[in-house]
Amino acid sequence: MSTLKFQAQVDLLHTSELQFRLASAVRLATSMEIQPLDLPVVWTHGKHRVSYREIALRQDQGDFAAWCLQRTATYMLAMAVKDAIRTAVADPKNSSNAEVRAAYQIARLIRNAFAHSPFDPVWSIDGDCLGQVFAVRKIVRFDTTNLHGQTFDWRHYGGPLALFRLSRFVRKEILGEKPTPRRPFPPPTTEYFQQGSLILRRVGEPLS
Image 1 (spheres, rainbow, N blue to C red):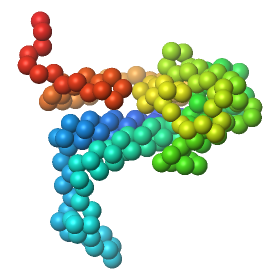
Image 2 (image 1 turned 90 degrees about the vertical axis):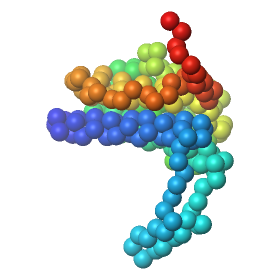
Image 3 (image 1 turned 120 degrees about the vertical axis):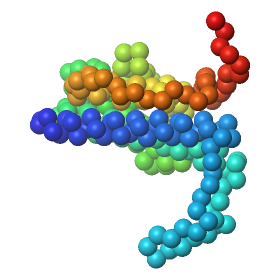
Image 4 (image 1 turned 90 degrees about the horizontal axis):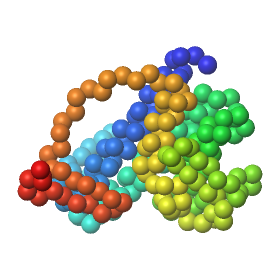
């Protein structure tokens, strides 16, 4: 496999991670009611034209849509992970490396759940994957026991941050991405702490 193809998959994983990070920022800002929901007063594109009245968002609509956006971004992470592994490994389902097999199956099964019903995903577990546990280090663990036909739930595999970490694992451990210094990024304007969907905002000065 050429270095260029590997790099292309690394770039796609980076892109899906960026989308997830942006979607997470939008969801946080929308939940805290600081995300602008402005849209064009008039928007034309090609032969179509819409007015603000047609596309304006209420706060509650924006909050729900931001949740959907973040969830969709995790679906894109799973797709990118699956495709990247297939590029790097000829037959990932039967790889001699248990973590490669697990990473591929987890990403593939999440992708399948969303592909069949993106807004209300349901687990569709292949017969040869039923009753199995797929795990990648301490990053992600997925037990398929009794999941076939069940409604998709983040608790089944560890949630969005598990997929975010899995993407990084694939980049570094399977595609062999070399570490590079991270470019500077701005500090947060407000300090938030999040546990699941619970959001806390720091008020006042940090304790010394």
